[in-house]
Image 1 (cartoon, rainbow, N blue to C red):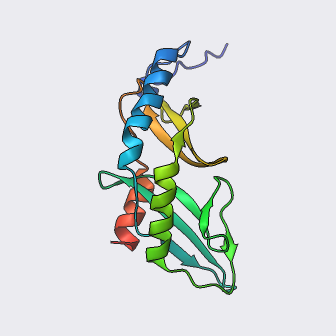
Image 2 (cartoon, rainbow, N blue to C red; image 1 turned 30 degrees about the vertical axis):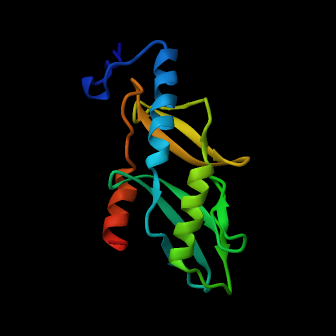
Amino acid sequence: MMISPSPSPIIGDLRESLNPEFVERAVETVRAALPFFTAGLPIIRRGPAGEIHVDAPIMYMDFAIDRMHYDPYARAPSPKGRPVRAWGIEVDPREVRVIVNSALKEARVIEAAEFREPEDAWAIPVAWGKFIILHVKVSYDGKELIPDYGLTEEVRRYVI
C-alpha cells in the first residue's frame, strides 16, 4: 500500500478559507499607494520584422510594481492582455512617460481581488477608464505591496 506524502512545510501554511478583511485591507493599501506610482523609462523592444513593442514599468519606491502596455498608434495605455506590436512608427520615450503618468493620475483601484496561490498574495486590479491596466500584488494580510522582482531587475539592467 502506497502512502501519499504530506505537503512540504516549505509551501507555507495552507488556509482553508480566505479572510475578506484581508481583501479590503489589500484594496486600501493599493488605493493609498496609487498616488505615488510613476512611469519608469519605457522598455521599447524591436522585433525581427521591424515591429516595436512598448511597456512602461510602473514604479513605486524604486521597485517595479507591474508593466503597463502602451499603444503607440493610439498614444495611450493598452489594457492588460493586449500588448501592441506596431510597425512604421517611432516612439518618443519621454512622450510615453508623460502619457502613462497622466493615465496614472486618472487611474482608480477596483474594489476586487484575484488570489495568486503560488505567491500567497492578492492581485488588485487598477483601471484607467474602462480598461484594467495594472494588477498590483499585495501580501496575503493586505499590508504590503509585492514588487515584480523580475521586472525590477529588467528595469535595472536595460533602462538604468
